[in-house]
Image (cartoon, rainbow, N blue to C red; front, side, top):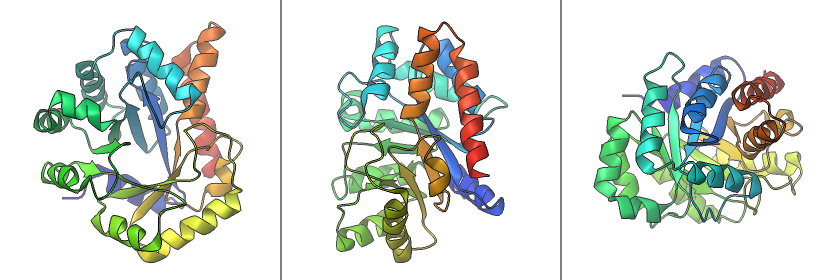
Length: 266
């Protein structure tokens, strides 16, 4: 059975473009608006990443941290994240959904309970930021048994041998972190250098879907369009923050931004 994530990549490739992946924090700026934002951006996104709000998000830059703190302040809990995801997946706006969070949260919740709830709420994939390969092998296998795609992370410093092993063990996609930074940092590496590194990864297994994330904005997205997929998160979170400060509708503003991003890669 082909995972919806793989199907989304196949569809984008047929259209001659990269898949567009978006990231928002569940519960930002309210639980109700969080669902509305997902529905709004899903008209243009191929895959939606939904983050668990976390009070110490080590991999996340200022924009996502701000979104997380807003969500926590509004009382968003793990059960709310699942509810938002399920409501989205059972709506007419449904797209493949990947939950993103940290392993300590999963441990506290209980691994088996967490995966059962993922399955029950139609979750297609998981990114666990602080669970690298090979430490993630047991958990990744548990995901596979539930038909949940575990997304492996690789970076510019990942050695070739390690890269081969990670790609071999990966499921429907791998996530290439374009630079050694927290999310939302200014692109410190030229897009041509990122694509050069990306092509080296693709040479190991050209059939494996690989997305690029970190530092992607409206200005840089078109220069990276030769990738299988591109992830934009901090720029969307920033748009939500700015709209709230200006008293504008974050649902409309986030949707409009993702439309502009999509237009850049068509």
